[in-house]
Amino acid sequence: MEHVKEEDPKVVEEAKRQLEILEFGAVEITPRDEFFEMLKNSLKEKKPLRIKCGIDPTTSDVHLGHTVPFRKMRQFQDLGHIGVVIIGDYTAGIGDPTGKTESRPPLTKEEIQQNVKSYMEQVMTVLDEERTEICYQTEWFEEVTLRDVISWASQTTVAKLLSHETFKDRLENTQPLSLHELFYPVLQGVDSVFVKADVELGGTDQKFNVLMGRDYQRNAELRPQVAMLLPIIHGTCGSQKMSKSLGNYIGIKDEPFDKFGKIMSIPDKIMLEYYEHIGDVNKEEFTKVKEGLESGNFHPNEAKKQLAEKIVSFFHGEKSGQEMRAKFEDVFKRKQVPEDIPEYEFERGKDLVTTLFESGLLPSKGEVRRMVKQNAVRFMDGDKVQDPDLTLDDSFAGKIVKVGKRKFLQLL
Image (cartoon, rainbow, N blue to C red; front, side, top):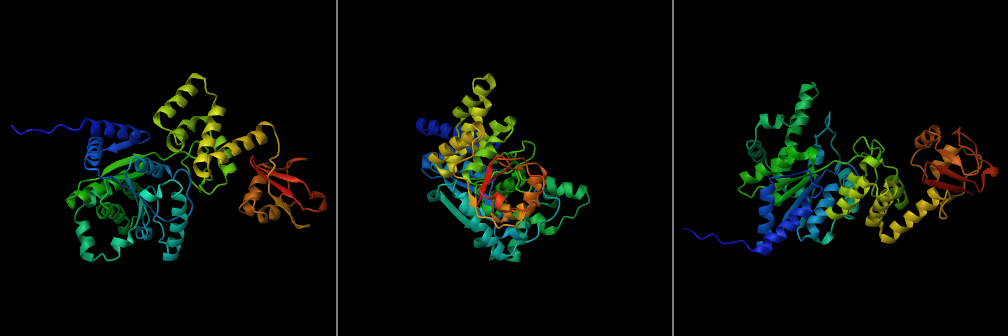
């Protein structure tokens, strides 16, 4: 009888420890048993796993919802593994059709480069730069021939591609579905072959595309990657996914006080979701918060302050997190105006809309008008502003304008 070598108990124990850390917050690990074997083999061979996550550089701004898979990648990195970020500079010309009701227009090379630079500067605030590989699809797709494309196409079926929920919905609703869009999951699968990914991270809406990578790696006689799917978190509204277009997002570029205030504005029902996926807590810490809230021993307002402080500290440092908490409590608990509000020397005779826009307090005149319409603009020593076209004269010098709950401006 062939002798079966016993596994090293230390290796098995460490693999179990890593599995417990990594599966916290994951919606699905497919296949989980293969993942556990991967961890054990990685430890035995002292060879780190390669953890893939791709981005389409179709936007330049990153919000906290985008960071969920990259936070998971950082957990892998802290355990000694390698993060591989795929820049979809080639497929940006196609656009990921997942969840889209219409095809996305291609971007120019200049637009892609600009978006990549901004996006990666923000993503690297989450990742460990020394354990991150950044790969561009053009490294392997630029030299692709028609023979290669046909070979890749032969490795899947039209029936399988049309089982993709997005494609199926488009056809059922008689909406256009272009042939080039069918190639997106194929190319994403081929990416995994070129970078030799062991694990691919993606949102739950990416399951079809991520599993394509297993097929193409198997066909290339490589060990198929494991799919680790992560949730798409709700925005600050609590009812829809975080999205810049919906205005319910918390951006990495947001100022620390804005981040803190936006966290404080979320409904209590999604607080645990934020703790689990963007709160930088482990399973034990999360369980303690959850049990405290359920028993009533941890007040939701205090829980939210601690969450906001954690998130600000993650991006801006512990001192900033503490300062933003103190500032928030000064402004909202004690009803005080913060000491470090921006000042702006306004032009006499100009209207309020133009002044607030030109000061940089709000991003557009339309946003100023919207805030006025919502009764969210007021002078601290007076009533709410009703007329957005209010003309400012010398009598307004020294006054403090408050917009929403967190923005202040002193007129000079």
